[in-house]
Length: 146
Image 1 (cartoon, one colour):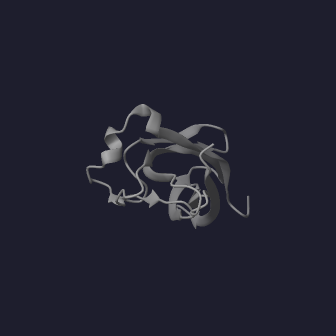
Image 2 (tube, one colour; image 1 turned 90 degrees about the horizontal axis):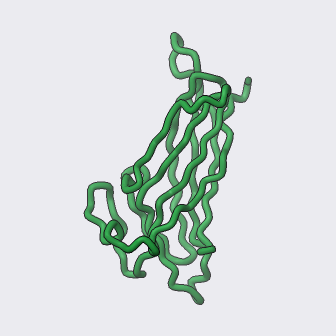
Image 3 (cartoon, helix red, strand yellow; image 1 turned 30 degrees about the vertical axis):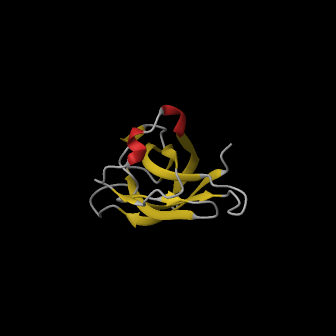
C-alpha cells in the first residue's frame, strides 16, 4: 500500500430538533501519511470524498459523492509524516447508524500547493494511475442513551 491511513471517530451531539425525531452526530476524520520523511517522497493530495450514511434500519439515508469536492473546503497536501484532520456532522432519523466511504486521493509532486475548493488543481488532470481511493471503514454513529 501507499502507507496512507484514515481513522474516523464519532459522537452524538444531541437531538436534531424537539419536533423532529433523530439525532445529530459529529465525526472526526484523520488522514495520515505514515511514510518516513527521511526515506520517502510520497506526497498525496485529497481531491474529494464519497460517503454512504445508513440509519439503524440499514436504510441508506444519505449519499454524498463529491470526487473533486475536497473536505471542509480544502484540498490538503500531505507530505511524509503529515496529517490532516477535520470535523463535520450529519443527522439521522434514528438513534444510531453507520457511515463509510472513501477519499479520492492523488499522488502528487512534493512541491504541490495546498488547495481550496474552487481552485483549479493540477491533480484533477493527472492520469488514472496517480489517483487512488483511500477507504474509510464503516464507523458507528450512536446516541449514548440508545
